[in-house]
Image 1: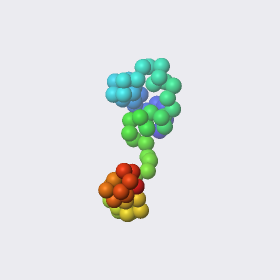
Image 2: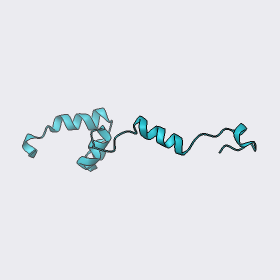
Image 3: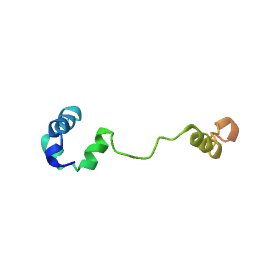
Image 4: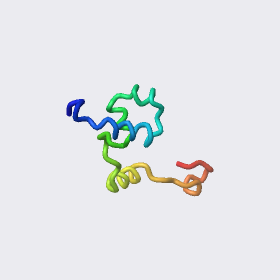
Length: 73
């Protein structure tokens, strides 16, 4: 999108009002940093149930009673 078609008022409102950034901080940000702060940057998907269960199986919780020495794990 060209600068002429960019909605600067909306972006400035999001940064200054929505995020509470000071103007000098807003203008120092890169577009990628601003998107990340707004929560719109692409990133890794949240952990799904299957991955959580795989981690729980690999690293099970162990209680003090199970170890018998007062230490967890």
